[in-house]
Image 1 (tube, rainbow, N blue to C red):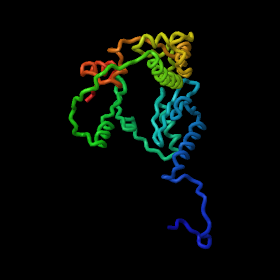
Image 2: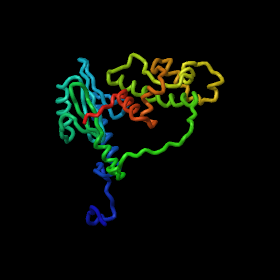
Image 3: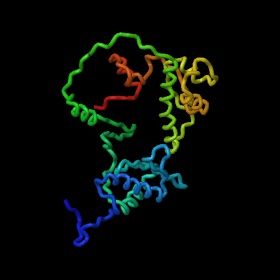
Image 4: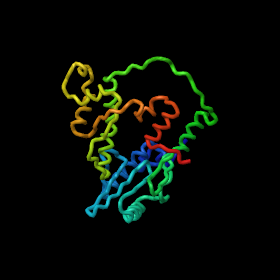
Length: 262
């Protein structure tokens, strides 16, 4: 099948100088263009989240813009800057202002005076429909009997994996002008693992643990994180990893701040 052909020059090809919608190069070209636009207009790309751009001025005004493909959500401490931002953007790009955000990336948002609440009911139903589980009934299944063995070393490695996230989040919050003054508390239900993390002295119990996991101690010494002991029955994180009785599950949901708004 022939495309665009110039009579008498059928053996020649044309070089495309623009990224057409649908080409695999298009997303990268668009991201490069919008990135250059933001940085040329006083925005700074957040080093901890490259889809977030921040613009500040000497008067203390601050504007946050979050980019996802060709969708933008923005906020700040001066509503007057919102209109300025939209007018400036409209001069360069074709835009549609859909107003106050209420739905984004399969997440429904409710903005009220007492806070912003997110709901993923639609997303959950979409998953159920995909796997044909819309009319499923709950059913209890027997669990394998046995005793789960755990060690302080295993918990120590798990802590190392965990604290990467709050350290990243602290950096992001700093860019958002919400710098954390106190260390982030990490709740652990293993006293031996806590002792191992707080003791920087090399000893028999830790010699076989990979060196890369010992950055826990560095994070503690920098006061980025702080390990606190919590009883197993009060460990909120268990809601994501263990099957619990209804009353315990309900208690953990409440402790996590989750509630049914329906």
